[in-house]
Image 1 (cartoon, helix red, strand yellow):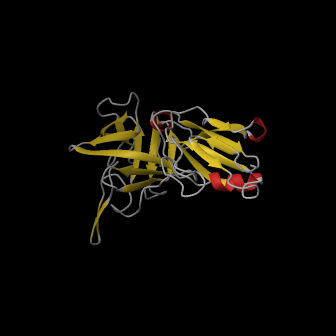
Image 2 (image 1 turned 30 degrees about the vertical axis):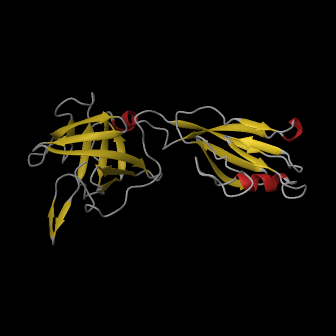
Length: 253
């Protein structure tokens, strides 16, 4: 989507709000082309006696003496906060997580998250004896807000600005990709000075939205759900635009 450009005190309005480079893109909440989930694995550890070992996701811990890892919480603390492929500098020897990252410990439990979002498996787990084998639970995490880009945009109007000061009210007409299917409400069809009119076209490619405005201005945006009813559109140049709402149908905001 187009950013507004400010030159000294003169506002040149294209269709979007915010000064270019005014804000960083969010780091979470990306709205994907398809609903994206990830399987997290919570591992609950048991205490280790001397020379016992336990392995999770390629990372293997061996207890060097009877007291160092005799409590489950101590074992969990050792497995916590490790990154894929990084060798810890302790009793893990030369082993490292392979395909997984580990989170913070919560008592005896540590959650392991796959590096590849398409990996719906659990990490390989083994131990030197059955009585110290960790227990496992899995949970599904929805990445972003669980809404696909097409659900968010097709047939809906993206509102930029605020009441009385709308900079854009862009209706994303279906099917996406058709020419002249991006329509700005302006002041409505009844207006004789600023009626509803096509302003360009739009399409979805992978996890981004492409906009081509009349005059051949083209933008590629990644969309983030801010969690408060607003959405951030980040273009490939790092410009950000806040949509204050997204409404169903070809309507005024």
